[in-house]
Length: 177
Image (cartoon, rainbow, N blue to C red; front, side, top):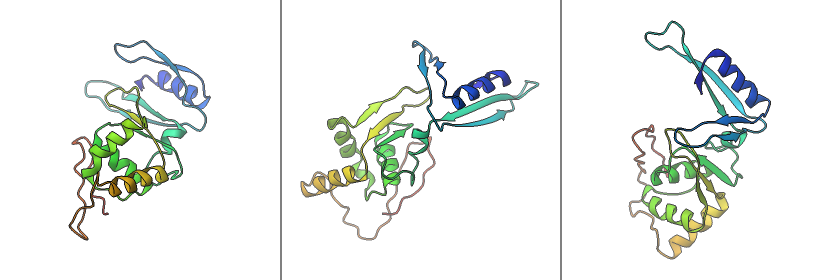
């Protein structure tokens, strides 16, 4: 949220107190929301040319979203992602759970998620967020079955690095496999 000092403090208090607040997306009806217990708030200021005072902003993150970062809550059964690009989805799920994957498997992985109804769209502003349902054991079973059925293949180059080409709006970081 971007707003005045009072607006930012009011929303921060609502998040901390687990209160319901209204979210208005352009072109849609408003919805009542709460980020639940243990939500985190991050406040900041942005200096805007031509304004006397900086613009205040607040980013609030639910505990559930906070646990979906790579290396966190490896037993979790869902992952919230800010982008539905197939390569990004596979990359983030693999990084979170430590899965042995290659980027070429992204179309197969998205088909599996869709067929198993393990992916849902979420509301977002300036992004295309999704919820991916499943845990490490589930995804490893899918990979094992797909390799046996030759739906996916392990690259022939042994001991080669894996290069991930993520969407342009994400920092590209190689994952070694």
